[in-house]
Picture 1 (cartoon, rainbow, N blue to C red):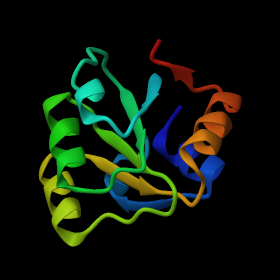
Picture 2 (cartoon, rainbow, N blue to C red):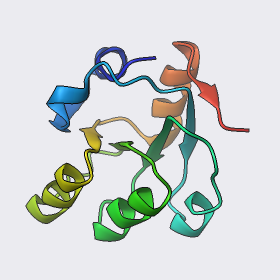
Picture 3 (tube, rainbow, N blue to C red):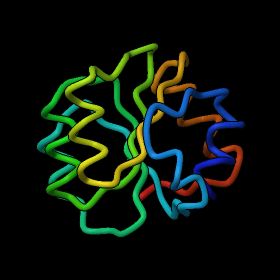
Length: 114
């Protein structure tokens, strides 16, 4: 699924990465535990989290994750956006809970990482 399709499914706000709306997501992973995210070895992963801080961006960078959704109406700070832009990441914000976000994406065809 492409980023632009994810934006529509979730009625999400595209915070950064507007030039990457055609980036394809193959699998998704939801977690607020960044130590769990560090164990991922897949490409084209979508990270869904409610943990909106610099650690999330840094963890995604280390895990080669290029697309993050901040659920539960969490907002990315200017510092987070700057770091995400430096790493060519897509950052989305949505109002839904992590559970509902996952359910909507699963229903639209996004597969879980495991």
